[in-house]
Image (tube, rainbow, N blue to C red):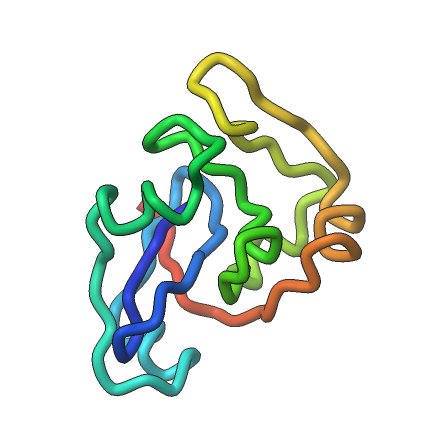
Length: 111
């Protein structure tokens, strides 16, 4: 999961751990002019019940726009941190999609 600022708005990106977002592709997908990485401190206050760096991809619960990379939609399951550095959750991608209703786009590349 990656957090970015897009035209001053915080946005959550969900992509496989072995991928990284590509800035040009991301700008094209999000349709924002200015996109850049958000500092951890900027997101920390938005997730008061999570450890820093262990936020879950349920950004919708925190009023954040959530984008998932197209490649992740092809996986049966996703695994992510559950608000702490020692707890993870594994759920079916279809359940994640149903609960979060993320926007989907092609914005990452494999490392």
